[in-house]
Image 1: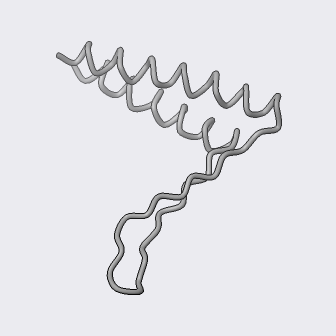
Image 2: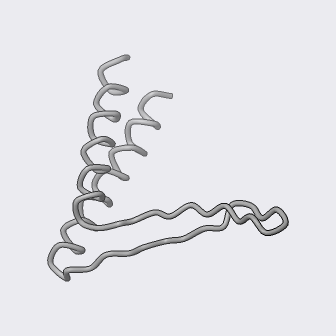
Length: 73
């Protein structure tokens, strides 16, 4: 079971690493705004910024997580 999670996280690591290099080369960033809830006149939004540095950080976090799962067997 751990091998499945390890391989999933490792594939995500590789994909985020490739995306971060792509964002760096193209000088690209993406801002995603999601409305979580709306109550009368109050709106609650979640804003997520994807740029090369945030994707690179997430890729290394996924690498560390996958290796922790791999060596925990």
